[in-house]
Image (cartoon, rainbow, N blue to C red; front, side, top):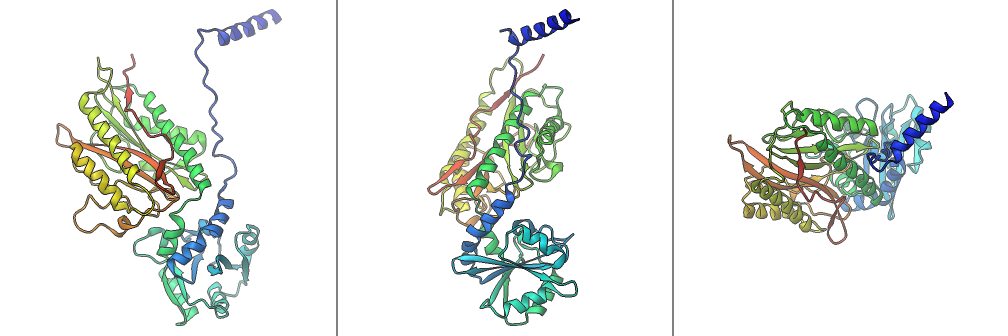
Amino acid sequence: MQKLLFLLIFGLLGVACSPDAPEQKPAEDTAIFKGDSPWPEIRKKRIAQLLPQALKAAGVDAWLIICRENNNDPLAHHIGGENAGGEAAFLFFLDGDSVKSVVFSPVGEATALRDLKIHDEVINVARDKNALTQLADYLRDTKIKNIAINSSTSMNMGDGISATQKERLMSALGPKYQLVSADEVIYEWLSIKLPEEVEIMTKAAELTAAWQIEAYEQIIPGITTDAEVAKFLKQKMAAYGVTDGWSPDQNPNVNSGADRGHSHATDKVIMPGDVIQTDFGIKVFDMWVTDIQRFAYVLREGEENAPDSVLRYWEGSKSGSRIALATMKPGVTGYDVDKAQRALMEKNGSSYVMWSTGHPVGYVAHDIGPSLGGAQVQGNPRPASLKVLKEGQVFAFDGFHAWELADGSTKTMSVEEMAVITADGARYLIAPQEELILVKSKK
């Protein structure tokens, strides 16, 4: 028995050490985003470093967010109000060049909120008292006159206060205070990401792109469907403990046929000659998201590369991405970026593309910040396209080239990358896709 065991071990070692043995891939680090979230400390830093400037830029004395359980404000997690039970009022106001935060919290949640050490002061609200009434009493001893609240007609994340909450707030405060929309506060605060946030998003983007390339390696032309490629990516997400960058039903969007826009992957079989688009994003630490697209071509029998026409479309798409990046810098508008790509698309012979060149990305796939669009529409572009880019903003943006298929439908290459605005320009978070991925037949 001992001799047999020795021979078995020796044989296994011999196979592992043989020069003809297949190379062993290193084990994947699936724990990269499974540790403690860095968000609590980053949240404190964002409040201390970025919120004072946001309040000054918005020209308001204070910002008020009302939190509660089951129907909470969309920004509760950004201010430490995610665990609110009864109604709590979070007040932020300038104190010199710093921001001071005071929370009026039901006594049942106040101790835990105090333990987070986010806010300067947490004031207990007794069970028979009201947070808004205590807020009004507190404000009478301050010089605060105008208060920004989360009421918005254009920003979903900034429209957290309900009609009844606003009505009761106005009743508690009386006519002494002016209530204004917090749109500008939220815009100035959330559109900028700290360097450590950009680093986290960079690591997530690396995985997002690498998994798409790995997914393309699994394809067997004539057998594999778009939905099966999407399923492979879902399995990678599960292994790493990350979640979807946007609606799970439409992430990832794998499409080897004509344009479908924002959509789900279907049971279409991937065939030789197809151009495959994968639009994919992940959320890490339940906080930061990515949005990246990678494109592949399925080789026909006898082909060693994509046809000249497809390569021309690819080069057009890639050049669109490069000119967009070159245009992005502090002080230019999102419209300027979109316009630069539209001029190149026309020169390259691209068909019309309805989508904007890009959008902010960070806490959600379509985050707060300037829209890299507007030049594709007639008339005046929407206000978000006329906002200027600022250092620290992160964007997902496409290089476009579209063409008509034989049946009259359209196919668009929209290789999507992520970039951060720097002091004097912009840089990709990860290396951009340089070559069209080639999917070979498997016999």
